Image (cartoon, rainbow, N blue to C red; front, side, top):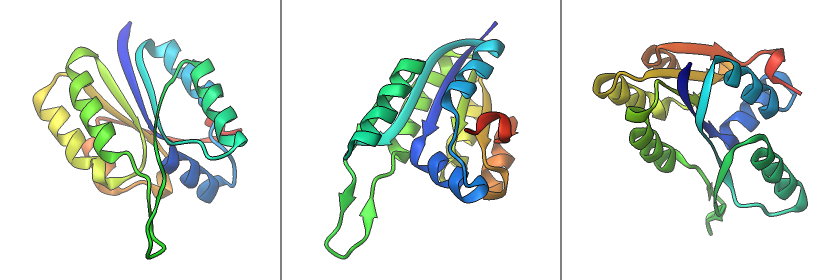
Length: 157
């Protein structure tokens, strides 16, 4: 069986599933589907530090499923804008782990990751796989991945 590493951009998946389907993503179904395809060596969910009981319960559920949850604070700037993305953290972890697994699986539709996938494709033998909401995924990202799986009802609550 192939060794897999899963990297989830939680904010991106949350908002794109809500926008695309008005439903939530089913992390348990994802983990079950992928574990049938290979040995999950790493499953990392990148999220915003919990601010309420609902987020704490959600992150505890992710841990129970088998994800390592990495959090960072949500920053509200004085001009009203906000920042809370994990792009750099996801990039560093994927570059570190990709040489040691057969497939990296990115859950995000963010086109900022296209250069990351290009680099992994050029420098490793690792397959690059993107799972995201098809209509809300950057074409530049799907152009760089070797496997694209659109989120469908089997991965929704």
